[in-house]
Every structure is written in C-alpha cells, then in structure tokens.
Amino acid sequence: MKLLFITSNEHKVREIRDLALKMNANIEIEHIRVAYPEIQHEDIEFVAESSAKFIRKEGLVGEEEPFFIEDSGLFIHALNGFPGAFSSYVFKKIGNEGILKLLRGVEDRRALFKSVVAFSPRGFVVKTFVGVVEGRIASEKRGASGFGFDPIFEFGGRTFAEMSVAEKNAVSHRGRAFRKFLNFILSSASMREAD
Ligand code: IMP
Image 1 (cartoon, helix red, strand yellow):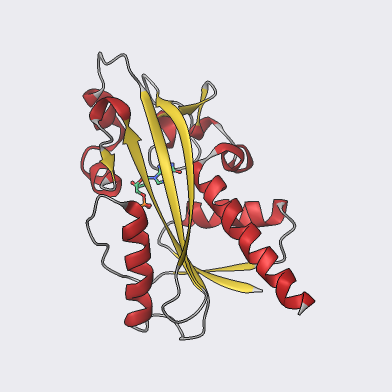
Image 2 (spheres, rainbow, N blue to C red; image 1 turned 60 degrees about the horizontal axis):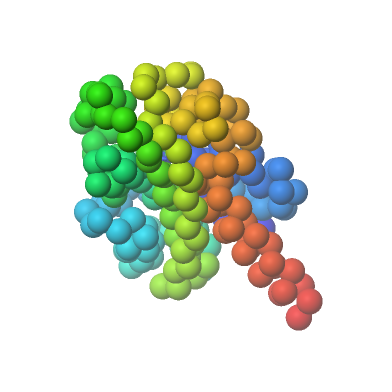
C-alpha cells in the first residue's frame, strides 16, 4: 500500500519510514511537497484537520489518493504552554537559544511535545491521531541529530538530538502518533482482506 506524506520536513519522513520498517508494515511512504497556507489557531488538531481539508478542496492531490500531514508543537509549562501551535514561527524567530534565554533562571523546566497526524483516505474524510511526550527543557543545547527543538528537549536524561531515529521514535510524540496511525492502517487493511 502506498500513502502520500505531504511535508517539507525530511526528518519527519525519515522517522515514519524507520517506524514502518520496524513495525514490518508493508506500507510505502511517498514524500511529496505541496505548498499550503497553515492557519493560525491555538489547537493543533484543528490546524492539521483544516490543512488536510484545504489540500483536498484545492485539489492539491488526486481525489482518490490517500494522504496524510503532521503538525506538532512544543508546550512549555512555565510559559503557559507557549509556543504551542506557534512553535514553527517561534523557532524561526528566536530558535533554541531564544527558548533557553526565556527560561534562564526558571526552575520548572517541564515541557511537552504534541503531534497530530491528519489522514485523509479519500474525499473530505479526515481522521486524526495524537501523540504526546512529556519531558523537560535542558539547560543548554546537547546532541547533533534530529531537527528543530531536539537539542533542548530532554527525555529520560538525554535530549532528542542525542538519540538515534529509532530511539527518538520509541518515546517521541510523533513516534506515538505515527504508531497509532500505522496500526489503524494495518488493521483497516486486514479487515478489507477478511471481507
Ligand atoms: P511543525 O509541525 O513542523 O510545524 O513543527 C512546529 C515546530 O516544532 C517546528 O519549528 C519544528 O522544528 C518543531 N518540531 C516539531 N517536531 C519536532 C521534533 O520532533 N523535534 C524537535 N522540534 C520539533
């Protein structure tokens, strides 16, 4: 089975391909880049669902072609959940250094990452899968792998940038959302075979 993953982020593609391989899922993930405007809204589930509907409405993929997108956000406890749905903008503007600066001297380092996969099997049908990981913001950047906030997001004593793709997938927000999504795809496929 082939699924289109619409994203501009190669790292996300690597993460889901690695996961699909580990799950022995016979699913081919085809990466395509399609430009679409992302609405600004506090709820990333709403953003992901709206984007998937927009992509269909504008005919940016074939009518019967199953595709999915993924949106994520970093929610920092001491900053009342900021930057949340605006993580991408904030990362571009102030980066990891800016976040570390905002948290200088702040003891409460708790943060969570949330990932939402919005899958559209056909038409305007959209199903979402959510994954969350609770961790903390490190006191400085560590590690060289991954992307975005990976060097400052710590889970179990290591930052995501100090983990391999497989290690990150095992615990990350996106790994959790992708696993739910792939399990759904696999169980729908086996139900179809049983029909
Ligand atoms: P988006 O879902 O790609 O819009 O992500 C929002 C922001 O969060 C971007 O700046 C990403 O770089 C960052 N981000 C999303 N997922 C991750 C992750 O797994 N690790 C680190 N940063 C991430």
